[in-house]
Image 1 (cartoon, rainbow, N blue to C red):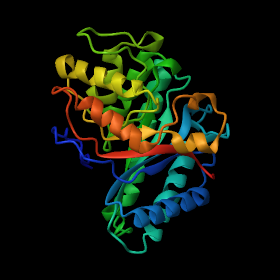
Image 2: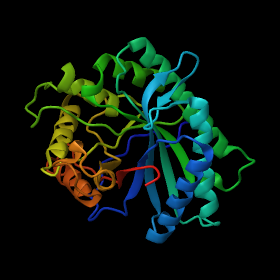
Image 3: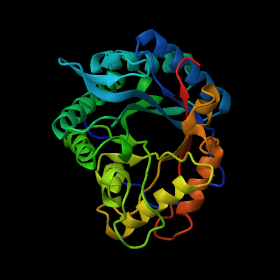
Image 4: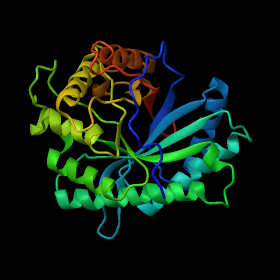
Length: 319
């Protein structure tokens, strides 16, 4: 099956304001029925807000293997296999489609997410990346099955990976990215943190955990399967400045040029739902602000200027 929309997008004028934001989710219950109701709620929100196109990421937690199957450790600390996640995704997609009640006024791109937390072994990373690519392909094949007419007109799926340098070595992240990209039909979203030095100074600057700017660029955009939806969490705007520096490095040295960011990701709703979370201190701005920060940062330099399409914010399933 041919890949969807994998051609790089040329620079465009910036959007004046952010589109309506979506709620992406930390998943703690990877069941078909639970995700059906989440999908239905997303459809109702889409219709209410009048969204014509939008992106949502469901992150199922850190990459894992239980000895017999690839999968993740979801946020309730339970193992979910890729088969479990496949069935859960069908629940979301069915719920979204059914609760649109025949409307074709919106189109959802859904990211099936995992993380590189504790992913340190390159062989395991490769195995998981290949399995995740197959999972995403299988879900997309379900969407495009002739037995489900109308579904491809309103939804599609991509992979998604929360790459964070502090969580694991660059070599393992590169191995996951390469394995996913080796046989992909659907791209993946990198919805992680930058954790790199800024501003751009012409050098391959250091990031956390011995990563370099080139490493962070590669898994977010240099890999042909990758698209970037960066975390823009900090109220100070430092996250946007970090991503500007990475994109500027790419414009000068990267294999695919500057990064065209698909969306900005905030965590405001997740912080509201979990008051007292230390990761929210100074990093709880709303999605409109995150979008504005990223758009303003990349448009401050002619080498990185482009339009950010969407915004989203993290939230917790079941809240």
